[in-house]
View 1: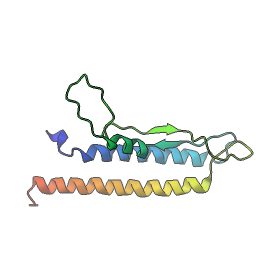
View 2 (view 1 turned 30 degrees about the horizontal axis):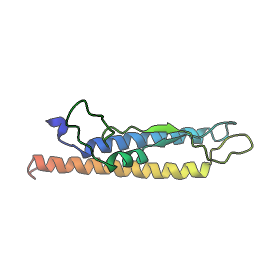
View 3 (view 1 turned 135 degrees about the vertical axis):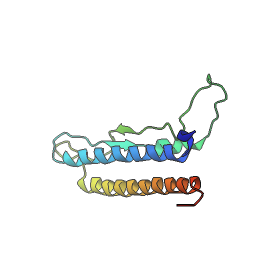
Length: 132
């Protein structure tokens, strides 16, 4: 019962936090390799996969039914974008673009941590019936 207390929003928020943490690490790695010849940048795909999983909500009434991704089970994946311009040394990292992605990722991570904190605060208020 306790593990279902934050359902369905907390597992989705946890997945989003994990994806943003991974994205922050990937961006830092891209920035660290900005001057490495032949280095190809990496990116994290999560938001599109999350959107696709929440478009259709299917119920499994039998364990033998095919299981689709639900928002709670979507995991981030790493990709190397193909359509990026390269410099003469073969490196395709654009420092300004990576810094903008880093700022966006930090902002989103802070927003998500605030949402988790607020949700847990609402649960605490509901459990204690508003008393302190």
